Length: 289
Ligand SMILES: [Zn+2]
Image 1 (tube, helix red, strand yellow):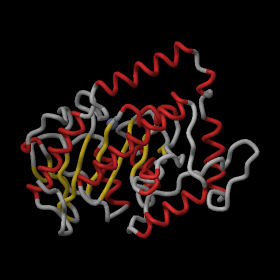
Image 2 (image 1 turned 180 degrees about the vertical axis):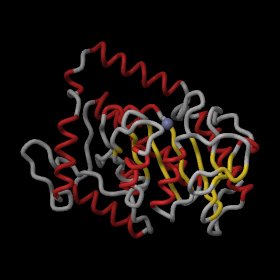
Image 3 (image 1 turned 45 degrees about the vertical axis):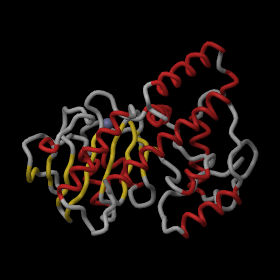
Image 4 (image 1 turned 30 degrees about the horizontal axis):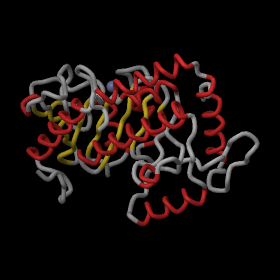
């Protein structure tokens, strides 16, 4: 089945099938527990299909999906949309180019969101070129306007963000793109966890390597994703490079350095064994194959 969208918006059937398929994948990959997570897809300038509240996203049927307008008013369907739809609606209002939004709680990305750490180190060529840097939206009280306000600054510049103490949010030009970005965010987080946390070492890309990857990304038509930090930039006593050296980047690096937890070398063997056990159980649960 192809989910490629050639026209500006998918039809109702196509949008709903894509949402159901992504719901199954999200649940099967352990990106959500119980009834968590939500997915939406625009089918017109002021209409979108979204997932209902109180239902496992792995077992949805198309009669459960709800059609709303961009203000969240239900146009079709008898189920209640999730209160987290406010986030989705804000993404669509901020960036009319976005056609689909996915929200999940994947374990590695959520761990970074809890630690208060953005995914902004240049460690994976694919991540630099594809998903880009993943910032973290500040903590927001669930169900309030703070949540949409917290993510608004990233919607036009990035492809997704972490939600402090909560989970992750990604968006794209169709449901599959938004979903694949969610998979990329989780993969980036898991590899960051292995390298920085478990192995305790990552050979980060140099400024020049990052520049060349971003140049290729721009040539392929992707203008969002920000710029991850390059190797050593902002490390003790090393000034940031010209590209990383904007006042915002330096402030960001300083903030990240302050919130960085103790180095892996300071962890006890018991702590390392416990983290290894948790990651192994995530893998056994099918989070990553
Ligand atoms: Zn959530």
